[in-house]
Length: 114
Length: 116
Figure 1: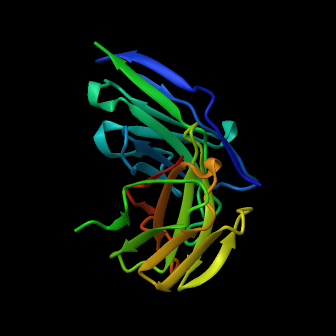
Figure 2: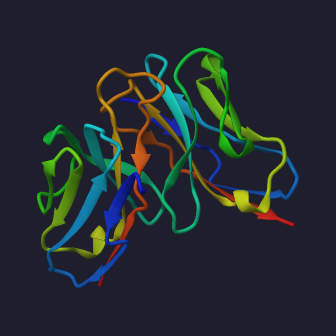
């Protein structure tokens, strides 16, 4: 069965600093990969997704992620963090698109300090 | 023009009660889901419906019964509520036919259930 690991439970960065959130997946083939963000008390918003093609994916709010097949990773990056980026970030996988439920990692909480 | 909506947003109730959470999507999707987010923020699938038919039912107590009156609605009824049912419940939807980059899941705002 597929699984997702987000090794960092909580990360704190200074505003303006760069950010990288790690995600590793376990699956026999290349899965479909997603990053979602959950602001406090809010629902889940899709940041970006990878299905195929270019392994560097651009998303909303200045985020990007890079798929590395050799490392089974899909790390999320942002060059300059804003205070409003403080939230919970979830990496998720699905074996194929359509009616397959997502398998989520346990999330990484991002705190941003001045 | 909310894509996936849930009601209520907050639900506080006593142990042993029966409650329902409603979900509606106006995206024309044919597949809907219920996810549970526990106190540690872990999200896990509970049920999945396609065209009103149950297609995935994870290990969930029988006290939880989803009902899909039509493709746009998926309600969750919970009998005999227990303390451990306290969580945030998210509804989501996606489109089964075809496939490709557009077939992502859209999530509702969540329903925070507190059982006292």
